[in-house]
Image (cartoon, rainbow, N blue to C red; front, side, top):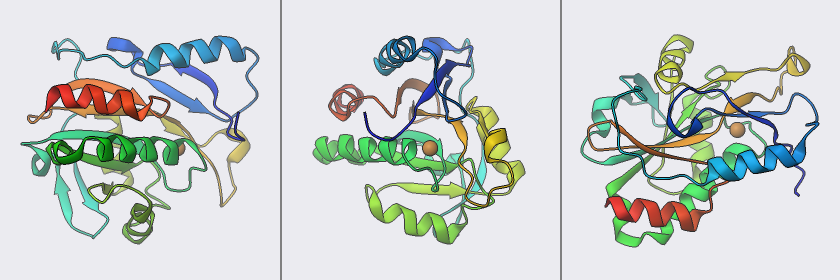
Length: 213
Ligand SMILES: [Cu+2]
C-alpha cells in the first residue's frame, strides 16, 4: 500500500449502489479487510438507469478556474463526469483525477462527448487561481469550479456529498479533509446515470463510458 490512508470507507448515502463513499483520515481502521471488501464492491460501478427514485445532481451557479461564471445549464448536451474534492488533498483527489484523465485518454475521440468537472469542497483555499494551477496536472478538458461557501454547500447537497475538517485537523492552516469520493456520470440533461470512485480502474471507467457514447 502507498502512504495514503483510506480509512473507514463508510456508506453514508441512501441512494442506489451505496453512492455515498466517505474517505476519512481521522484514525486507523480497526477492520482493514472489511474496508477493502467494501471498497471493491463500490468500485464495481455498474450502469444504472436513472429511476428518478432518488435525485442526484441539481442546479448550481459557480465560478470556473478562469473566473467565468458557470451554471449547470452550461454543461447540458454532453455527459458530465462530476467529482467533488479539494486541491490540497494529498492522495484521494489526485488519484481520482488521474484515473479520470487516463480513462478519457483511453477513449480517443469519444472523450469529447464527456465533460469532466471538479467541484471544490474547500472554497476557502481553492480560489480561481489555485484551481487554475492545479488543472495543469490533469486532462485538458477538465473544468474546475469554486464559489461562495453557500453555493458550494448547495452543490454538495444536490449530489449528496459530505465533506468536513476532522477534529484532529481543526485549527491547522494545512488541514486535510474527510470527503465523499465519487465520480458521478450525468447524462446530457443532467440526470444521474452511474458512479465510479477514485479506486475504479481507468480501463473499467473507459469501458463503461464508451457504452454511453
Ligand atoms: Cu481528496
